[in-house]
Amino acid sequence: MKRVLLATALLSTTVFAQPAEDRIRQLEEQIRMLQQEVQKLKEEQKKAEETKKETEALKEEIRQLRLDIAMPKLEIKSYSGLGPAASKVHFNPRGVSIGGYGELVFRHNDVNARGGAKSIANMQRIILYLGYAFDEKLKFNSELELEHASTSAGHGTGGGYFKA
Image (cartoon, rainbow, N blue to C red; front, side, top):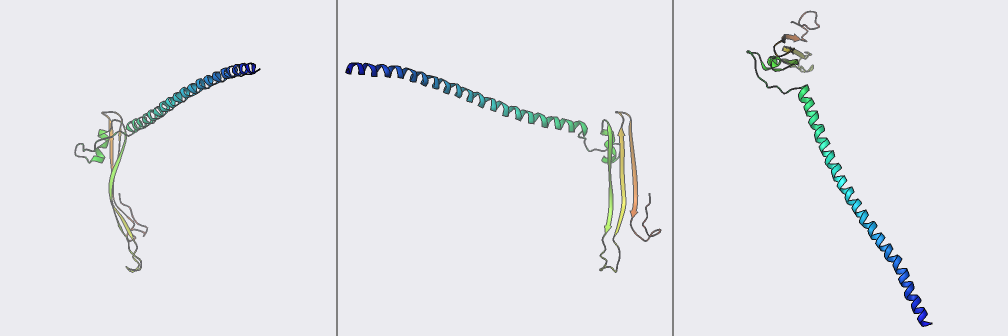
């Protein structure tokens, strides 16, 4: 009887040990496969991040190219004795050129300090340039100069005056 029990115990361990070993092998294989998948996902994530960086760099480059086409960088220089603002149209390959400058004098009078004198603004002068380059040879350039536009009440009807 002892021998039968011993033989049964040995056989049952062998029988039960076999499926456990197979199960361990299956689990180890699954672990290896999962590790490989995790490694692949990490590599794909790195590639996706690199692609995103490249895409952002390309977006910025395209934006800069569009700006360069829309507003080309021009040197500030004079043409035939004209000022840089008036000369812009001569260096622009095509399109509109706008420029100008001016001088404004504003005198703020405190009503209490100067016996009720009003503040005065006087546009000493303003020079506006407008040009258009039709092509490399045909260009339009204009200049409008205005002087002494004032808010002084001492001229005309008291509403100010404008001289062109």
